Image (cartoon, rainbow, N blue to C red):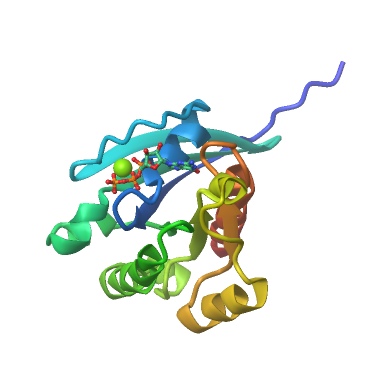
Length: 189
Ligand code: GTP
Ligand code: MG
C-alpha cells in the first residue's frame, strides 16, 4: 500500500471591486459568490465583504476576500484605508450609461496612487481588470457591445490587464474574468 501526503497550499487574496454608483459591483459579487441576482437596487454604504473559496488545483486553494466598495466612496476619503494590502482590483462600468465609463479612469488612478504590490513582489501596480457590465440589456435595446479594438487600446494605455463584457443578471463572463485576475496574481507569487 502506498499512501500519499499532499501538501496543500492556501493563498488569501484581497480584491477590490470599484466603479461608479449602480454599475453592478454588488450584483456581480452576489452572482459570483452566492449565484443569485436581484433587480432591486440597494446602494452599498461604505464597504461590504464577501469571501469566495476556490479549489484552484489539486493542491491549491485560493481564498478571495472581495471588498465591495460603494460607488459613492470615490467622493469620500476612505479609499486609501480600504485599498490597503489589496493584491488585485476589478473596475466596473455600466454599458447603458456611458458616463460611468468616465469613472473608470478615475477609479484606476485612485487605485494606482493609493496601493501597490508588496515589496517582495516588486512593488508595482496591482493587477486590475475592467468589466463592461449589464450586457443582457443590449438585447433589450439599451447600450451596445464594446468595440474590442478600442477597449484593448484603452486597457493598454491605462494599465488594465484586460477587459470582459459581463452580465450579473445572465451570469455571463464573471467566472472567466475572476479566473483571469487570479491567474495574474498567482504569476506574481
Ligand atoms: P453602489 O453600491 O451604489 O455603488 O452600486 P453597485 O455598483 O453595487 O450596483 P448594484 O449591484 O447594486 O446594481 C445596481 C442596479 O443595477 C440594481 O438594480 C441591479 O439589479 C442592476 N444590475 C446590476 N448588474 C446588472 C446586470 O448585469 N444586468 C442588469 N439588467 N441589471 C444589473
Ligand atoms: Mg453596491
